[in-house]
Image (cartoon, rainbow, N blue to C red; front, side, top):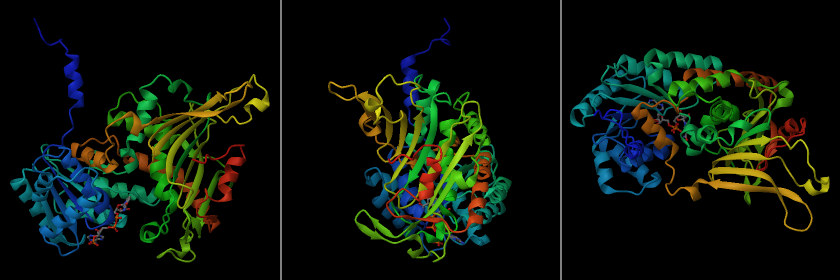
Length: 510
Ligand SMILES: NC(=O)c1ccc[n+]([C@@H]2O[C@H](COP(=O)([O-])OP(=O)(O)OC[C@H]3O[C@@H](n4cnc5c(N)ncnc54)[C@H](OP(=O)(O)O)[C@@H]3O)[C@@H](O)[C@H]2O)c1
């Protein structure tokens, strides 16, 4: 009897649960002395090693201008791991990781430094068995991306063979507008084919963001009402309560829309609004995101459908806080916005007529990221108007962070002899439903880079389409001059409320 068709469901189940472990490889971090590398990348690498997801001979190479020996670098990684790792410190894991740490000193315009890097990598292939497979993480000022890509090409480090992969990881911002994004993609794609380019949008590494796909496409409950017949509008918010002290170098001249809307919020919109992909293969998923982003544009007129603000000094959490222009490093006449809101339309059969409102800001009321799908009111209420006066719209809120989970809001009878209806919520919390703690976004994304799994990384088309959506808004704002002021600790400038009030809607106060 043939055994070919015999399927053991228990075994299949077990196979799916096997951890995904990276094959032999190494990671080179450019800009290894920087903030991102210390706070996120080094700890994530240790956490992956601690969870047994890195190959035994894994190698970590740091590249920066400091005059460090390998031991100095090792010490820096050690301190970053001790301070920021998510999982407990284990000496044997650390010892194994430390054996594979190397440092190459040099600047991006220094050919000799890159030739030294080639030697270091060749040596690691010999002594650590990294097999010629290496990822290059550009954790550096965005202006330096082209120079490093060209050096990787010149030195031969970007060259792949059928048995040896080379990948590049790029941090946001991916350009400043559509034309600079196209230019950057062109330079990067001259050196690395698109399937070897991993653009990090760390929001896509969050469990709650991946859960949007599970919620929509693994259930029968939500998808039938996920359209303009039932949905009134969608609000996507990323609010922070902190200011920009110490981040002027990065933020001044960039602003909230470029920093957050172009990447994180438009990716959240794409996952919320896209059609079901034919499979979860990367190409199929990305194709749906590209389709929905192609159909998205700002609602008009921009004076009424956008809002822009800059935080002024004030009180927040019982503390006196400075305004943006009093923060170190910002010009006293800086026109950089710290709050941005836009109304977008998604011109598809599913979404025509449903506004998508995106907003982000610093020094707002609280730190929260959420997607709120707000439903239309029931067409008829067979109650006295006094019975339902406290009733809002039904809403499904995906809480991306903090307090990760999902809330469903609906009307319920207030206990008592009268028929009175008020909003109540039904809550799902990750922390309550699952015992496993979620990995950090950078853990998931770094592992995907090493495994060559590109689903959670925006591709060049998505990046360019996002800029195409945002460019007209940025041009409109640039022509208008200074942004409106808002008090720290509030929910943005008055124009943000006005843009909603015109259609009788209001922002949620999360
Ligand atoms: N920090 C975050 O949380 C965060 C979040 C999202 C995205 N990002 C992005 O991640 C990247 C890194 O951010 P970061 O905050 O870590 O930046 P950072 O603290 O300013 O670090 C920049 C790094 O680049 C190196 N560098 C600069 N010019 C160099 C040159 N000519 N030759 C060699 N090395 C050079 C510096 O090394 P030296 O020691 O030699 O100066 C330093 O290690 C940026 O693209 C940023 O936009 C950061």
